Length: 72
Image (tube, rainbow, N blue to C red; front, side, top):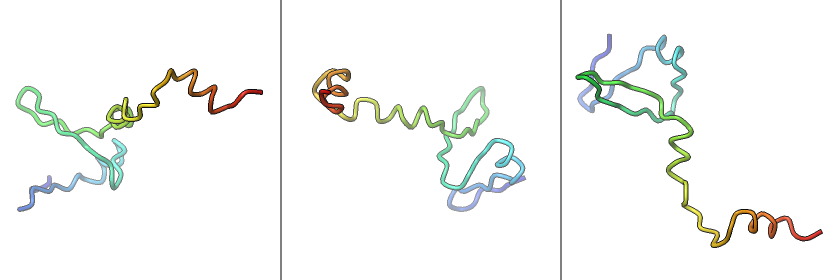
């Protein structure tokens, strides 16, 4: 059993952290479903999705890679 602090913080019990792979610094997300709160580790995939399209190289990827490799 955990309690919520005045700052809204909750300690996740060690057994649960270990079982689900929660590590210090991990981002977690909260979802409400059917009146319940679901806590889950934010996946690498969802973190990478934030960066999709962030770099605009102004050319097709194949052309960009070819230019980086140079001509042989």
